[in-house]
Amino acid sequence: MHALNATLVVAVLGCTGTVGTEVMRQLAEKPCTVRGVLRQQPRSYPIAPESQVAQVEYAIADHESEDQLCAALVGAEALFLLIGTNPGQVAIESRAIDAAQRAGVQRIVKLSAPMVAPPAWVEVAHWHRAIEARLAASGLEHCNLRPYAFMQNWLRNATPIQQFGTIVGSAGAAPRNYVDCRDVAAVATGLLLSNQPLPATAITLTGPDSLSNQDMAERIGRVTGSSIRAINVTRDEHYQMLVTQARLPAWLAQHIVELEELALRIPEPPTNSVAALLGRPARTMEAFLNEHRMAFMPARHPAPRRPTEFGLAAR
Image 1 (cartoon, rainbow, N blue to C red):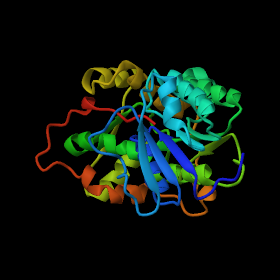
Image 2 (image 1 turned 135 degrees about the horizontal axis):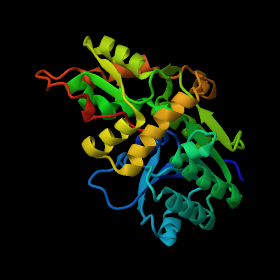
Image 3 (image 1 turned 90 degrees about the horizontal axis):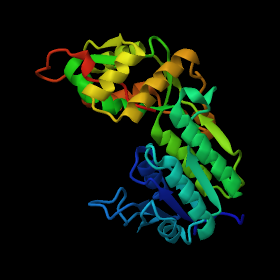
C-alpha cells in the first residue's frame, strides 16, 4: 500500500450513524477528502459539503447493489465501514467489502463488537465475526475496532429517566464499560489517515468508566440534583418490556438483554485502552453527563412512575 497523504480520499459507509457522523466531522477537520456514502438523497447532510479544511462530498448508493457501492467507492483509498445494527448487516457489509475490492480501496477500518466467549451468548457478535472473516479473506489491509458500550446510548434513555426517575435493566450490579463515541471516532480517524501500516487487525476499545445501573442512577442523580432509582428485573421481564412497551423489534430487544446477561456472566473490563491509543485522557462518564445534564433533568410535571415503560439501550 502506498503512503497515505493529504490528497487521500476517505469514504464513510454509515455516515449518518452515531459514530459515522463523528468520523465525518473529525475527517472534515483534516487535510483530506471525505466522502459520505448515503442510501438516498438526504434532507440535510451530516456535515455540510463546504468545510474549512477538508473537501466533503457525498455519493448515493443502494446498499443492496454491489455495483452502486463500487461506483460510490471508486477513487477512495480508505473506507470506514459500519451500517446501523440490523439483521441485514452481514449481507450489506460483506457486499461493501466486495465493492471496495473492485473499486481499488486499500484500507478498511470496520467498527465491530467485542469478542464474546462463547459467541452463542450474543447473536449480534455472530454477525460481526462473520463480517470480520469476510474482511480477512479479502486480503485488504484492515482493522476491526471492537468498542464496548457507548456513553451516547444513555441519551436514548433520557426521556424515561426524565419522566419516571427510574433505570430498568437485567444486569443486576454488573458493571458495563463505557466509551465515548467521539473517542472511538478519533481512533478510527487516526487509523484511516495514518501513513503507517495498521498496528493490528483488531483492537478492543475500552473507556475509563465501568459502571453498574446503580452507579449510573447515582451519577445521573448527582448531575441533575434528583433521585434516580435503578430497578433490576429478570431477563424475560426485561425482554417483554422492550418488545411490548418500548416497542422495539424482537431482534433488538433480544440483543439488549443478551448484553445485560453477558455483563453478569463475564465482567466487562475496567481498563482504558482509548487513552493509550489517543495519547490523551479519554472522555469520562462524569464529563459526558455534565455535558448532557439538561437531557436528564426531571420533567417539570412528572408522569406517575411506571418503570416498566422502558429499558436500556444497546451497545
